[in-house]
Length: 333
Image (cartoon, rainbow, N blue to C red; front, side, top):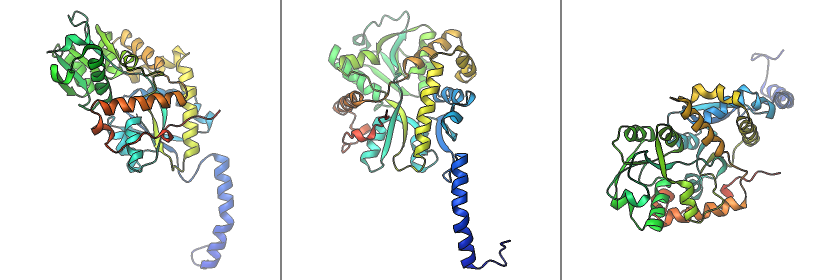
């Protein structure tokens, strides 16, 4: 028996060298590593939680050999901080941010999560019919003046209606849920919001005047690539677990696309106020399940980057950021 009293330094080294192969073999057999489970950052009430619940409930994580631990994030802004500080191994965020970080020397990778996007909505009885009617109106914009959808919507307005929305309308920036409430209360004439809030507004009687699909069509961007995806550090000791996560995500989405029971299970997480809202969120989520990333999506992403830069997005992207196709993870097979 080896004790602290009897072992010498050389004897301890020998004991460790003998035990190490046994430990490595045991770890390989159980699927665990010293690196620990994959830490996946997720906003508490975000759609990623619906998918995580499906993966766990159906045992898809065990099926693909995934060991992961969700990390609860307070909001979308917390994700990038968590990733860069090591609090999370993987987050869901947008590729323009990841591209900027890559330009700053942080080698990140991006795999698509969702193509779902918001739209510009107005109350059902509003006299506003087209984007040209927004001149002089109160327009709520989710996020800030450098929100990606807002920059692209301004480009659309200039192209199809020759108006400068930022100058000709009264713009109110704010958090997505807050702006949705203001729209419902009649304090906004129009609202450009994230897809989940847009669905909630439309279930309450709002209607689209411009969707982001309209914007991309006018800007000749096709196919439309996912803006939002899984982001992780390229030099990641848990690379095999990231691959397993992406496979579990694929299988989880396939199940959600076909199973009513899977949606009934996640319904409590969705915090819906009506069946119409539930069905709207379900349809929008399923419509946003992305295809595997391909060279065509990379070409479209570069077009989007140029459109953002040309329409005032330098603060968002960074003046020195260059397009780097190596950011995008292309699945093999």
